Length: 262
Image 1 (tube, rainbow, N blue to C red):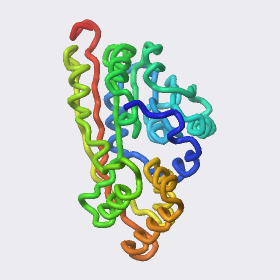
Image 2: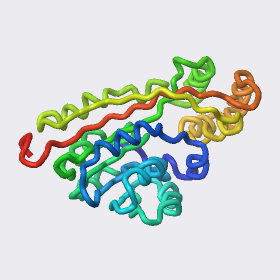
Image 3: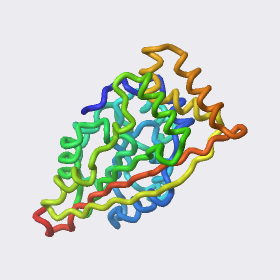
């Protein structure tokens, strides 16, 4: 399913302030897999406000050629203010990659599920250099390890039309293998379990930055935020919640020049 242009408009400030960042170990893994070239060409696809770039630019260095694309004009404006050295574009990632070339690293952080994934992957394969990498990274709330998150997901399923906690349960490894496997690309999966301490007010702010909660508010009004706040009060100890996450990194690397039929 292709993601919609206005899905995140109006949410950029809360999104940037409250969304969790990505585990350092997974970002280091992306940097480790990137080709060993003097000046990498990096594309952040579905970049949002540049949260992935916050961790990647220090690892990859300032001399890379960075591009970022997102469908939301608000997200792009926020990202451009944070990273003026990055070339920002507003629009879908799929046609952007179809017109791109000479790319070494494509990152899709918390965005791949919204895309036309087969189109995205074929475009990525087409524009990547030999030994180029596409990296899909996502933070998933680990509701199986938390009674609070289990209750929160149940609330979202009740108030947000069409929402299911399983909305991101796709086999990304199989999708990468289907596109990159025939050319002897290397597909790998890395996971990280971690916890994020969060003030109660920050969790409510993060929730309000999500499209699921915004759909609930559109349908039921501000009572949705009140119910989230009540849930937080019921489960928090003091002023802080501990939110468990399971983060996943899916990578595909194209073969070296002259190998794998490229």
